[in-house]
Length: 199
Image (tube, rainbow, N blue to C red; front, side, top):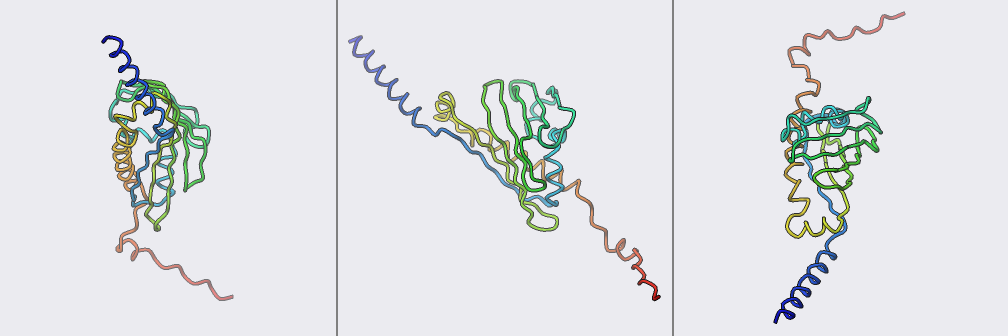
């Protein structure tokens, strides 16, 4: 009887391992939002790592998070490392590629509570003189532990809501910082340029 139980357990474990092994090797999370600000304004807000604390959803989870920045906080090679409570963990983010004001790519290294590497991409598509479609995505590889974890919780469900909150914060910040259009009264008060004098 005991041998039969062990055999059944072995079969169950083997079946579970097969199921885990067939899970996707990669994950992709993506969210988009329309922002009422020029693409250059939104790009500048995301492209300076020091501004992340003003809109990142994770900074609000640990206001006392310790951060270490490189001397330059924007442009390829700029990075910052963070270390905080169990809600934000420990890691590092580095800008690896950019095409202002359309695209920004970052290498995201998680150290705690688990180790993994992913790529974060921001695409900024101008939809008008003062409007931008911002798409924030995350791509990474699933190791065996990640595949096992995906049986109960996938990355989209785990951080998709954070992306939505972050984009909402980014929208508010970028729209507040865009140059204000002159009011009709102000525009009417600006004298018209005089025509050049005839020779």
